[in-house]
Length: 216
Image (tube, rainbow, N blue to C red):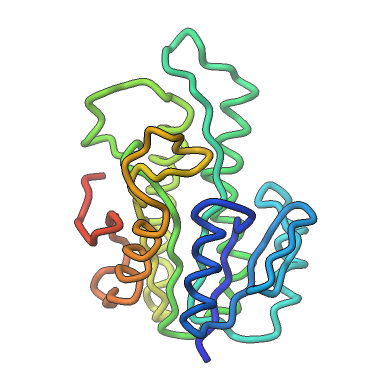
């Protein structure tokens, strides 16, 4: 039975990952910060801004795993230069940029050779595709995350572990809002298909939920 750890599974995309992988017969471990109950998964209490909690959660995973999904993230709507708040910016960077790398380090030792680390990024982190501006903190955090993931892919390639940055689309979640374009089930189904189809040559890629390559 293949196994997956999903970091950030309380709701939205993370929760749908749990549902779909469990339905497909995977053994699912899922991190949450609160007292959520998720019947399909073995729950681990962890916060990506608290490295000690991540290390403790990883120690509770007795199995080697095939897949690590890094999903935890936050957003701040600082749409103009004048509205950047230093404290909020630091929080977004801690959760969206450093948090996934700390989680990857904590759980990385559980990954089998040939395993995959898949992190949820965004086209808003693409410098090449930025034509709309705004959302300074979120854009910067995801651009920095992409740089970290690309670098991690190089470091882990000799171990046979693939790393990929994934854009889920503009998804109808609490973060995406009611005006979003993509149903959550469609996004996660697509992301799972992309992850399943990854080849060693694809490590370090930035792909959307349809499998299209995205500009950095």
